[in-house]
Image (cartoon, rainbow, N blue to C red):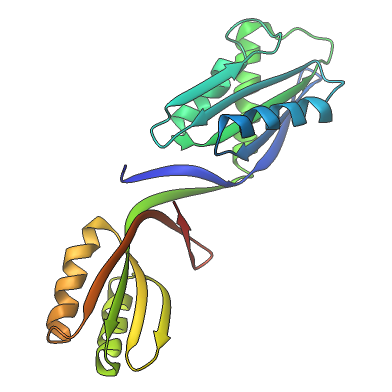
Length: 217
């Protein structure tokens, strides 16, 4: 699994006008190519009277699948420039459609490239973009004395505690990045004199938004 990658968490829209042509960008997170194609059809139906609905999408944690379409614009003036923006921003699992309503004035190849890229960038500014970091979810069991030390260490290292359950002992689940894993477990073992039991549940990706920890498979 890769260490980290960027995704669109919440999609967004943006619009620019260039020589009376309107360029409307719509961006959405996707997880499969089928979702990308369904999104393209949705935009074509929504903007059925537009001159063009050009698109680009990137799929996979390693950007394994990339596709783009000029949708009738001159070759390499719309879809490919849009794709270059997504790749430069290092986005994954993202689909973008830029809709054009022709304003009566030709923009030339360079003008089209700039317009499609500018529209897409304006849409990205209105998206919520997250950087997902690789982590390991641990369940840690300790006694009531140990939970205070666990909480102190977690706060000190700014760790993401997911849940805590109190029974005859205390069970806490949290996320550790590869850089934090050994240091935290060693410190907790020392602080609790070996009375903490660690169980590695799974590897996953995580990010923080508005103070909350979000988990991604």
